[in-house]
Amino acid sequence: MEIRTYDTVVIGSGAAGYSAASRIKSDGRKSVCIVTEGKNKGTSRNTGSDKQTYYKLGLGGSASDSVRNMASDLFLCGCTDGDNALCEAALSARCFYELCENGVPFPSNRYGEYIGYKTDHDPCARATSAGPLTSKYMTEALEKRSELLGVDVFDGLMAIEILKNADSVCGVLCVDVNTGELSVFKCSFAIMATGGPAGIYADSVYPESQSGSTGLALNAGVSLQNMTEWQYGLASLSPRWNVSGTYMQVLPRFVSMDAEGREYEFLADFFDDEYQALSMVFLKGYQWPFDIKKVACGSSVIDLLVYRETVMRHRRVYLDYTRNPFALEKIEYEKLSDEAYAYLSRADALLGRPIDRLAKMNMPAIELYAGKGVDLEKEYLEIALCAQHSNGGVSVDAWWQTAVKGLFAIGECAGTHGITRPGGSALNSGQVGALRASQRIIASNKAEISDDVFLAVLKEAEERNLSFIDSAMQNADNTDAALINIQKRMSECGAAIRNTDMMKELLTYVSEEISTFSSKYGIKDKKSVWRIYRLRDILTVQIAVLASMIEYAQNVGSSRGSALYTDRHGTLPNTLPEIFRSTFDDSKTQKDLVREVRLDGITPMITVRPVRPIPDEDEVFEKVWKGYRENQNIF
Image (tube, rainbow, N blue to C red):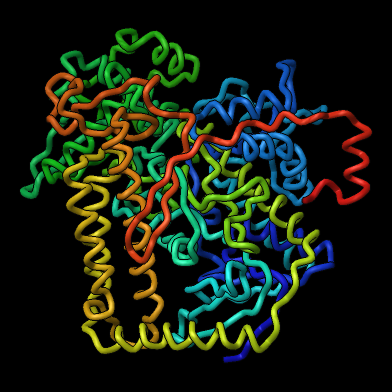
């Protein structure tokens, strides 16, 4: 193999990856390149929502805010390390303004204030937005900056192994997704910017081009943390898109369909009052994530009803904007909740059908689906309760470095979020993580290993991976069917609804599949080599995620965040199946503890540690200035 040598290899071409590469390149002291499966793939570039949010420090209006206030709010999300929270708050404004300077069209008023609004789990109206494609604009702007700087980008390469000498990064082994040939980079630093492990679920709002590569970290001996914590919500399946905001506030009809084509307005099975049902649907607009706190008497019961139809009754669920729910020819709006009635009235949307209300309130929402081949004026929109974001991920320190020296994780693949992160904080975290990692790398004096040592490491990795590929070429082409099966089973028992017995059964199955992988799974030709690595990565991550969820269920058990753990001793919302019986006691959810998981072979090893507190250091200016003059306070 040709050996390419760089100081730093960035794995991934999303907003976080481009940001890190650009910062390292612009400094000039370290060489850097980007390795990516597909430059136009990934969540940053291909996802969005009704109003995709960027969470930052308050930068407009009369409401007071501070770095410490924001850090405290992030820390109080639960299971969040205080040093990461403080960094994300302290560097929020710097990273946000840099995006603005790079051309991301965040709106300011005529005086230059960036006025905010409240988002999920946000006490201070810190949110802003450049529209439903905010992260796409960020990625494009940062990509343009990296091109101007001359960052080398190797497109079409999947990273399959982090090469290590002892406990330190020395390279990245890749496979060409078009030819199946191996390729290698010698480096002292690697930054994983690979996004969340999107591929473990079937019902997912992640773009289909995003599967994640979190197994890279596990196989390198790195721990993951908070893998119990995800965000789930209602989303359309084709295209994959959150149905939040006005998609719900215009009161669409929820309908399920069985295999024979019979339709059911299933909300009527639970709600005695149809106007109460409509008021709950309205609330789903800005209470979009499934939230255990909003089940007993809130809007998240809608999510459970959709899950019951799709998973338990094996029906397909749709939103219908062409007719009013419950055969109402005319909605008596004054019978809605005061909040819903006032909102629709102020929007001049007290109109006939859902599509009429949507056109009045948010015509771009209709155009968005039209641009993706779905005519909401005529067609049903299929939905499910889907995985949207992983709040957990790779364990990192205050510089976003892992336990492997020289290996960093930024963006969604880093486990810096807590149980109930504010909406949009992931975009800020990705930019802050990119800045922190690049600062540490630029300041590092880590020595490059000799060619002889590197070649010895590479030879072992090459032999191991060629043997793996050769085995796959001998077996029948069955990876796609296997992937569909494990993703479906994961969505059924280990997503928003978590049943311990079912998760144990699935963990046993997945562990067996990994242990017999080389003798069982195959591909049809060399161009498909990347598919066998993707399947192995997803199975590997599923082991870590399932083990984390099972451990929490057995040792804590109280539902929290965006997850309901089945508990036969718990309470049950009226008329719902027993799988939804659960216990919620916010005081017993162990928010001050972080659960970490690593793999010993294929055996998951789980440890529990206290969260790292928010640093409270001596902030005397002269002391800070002295440290900055000496080493820019990077150590």
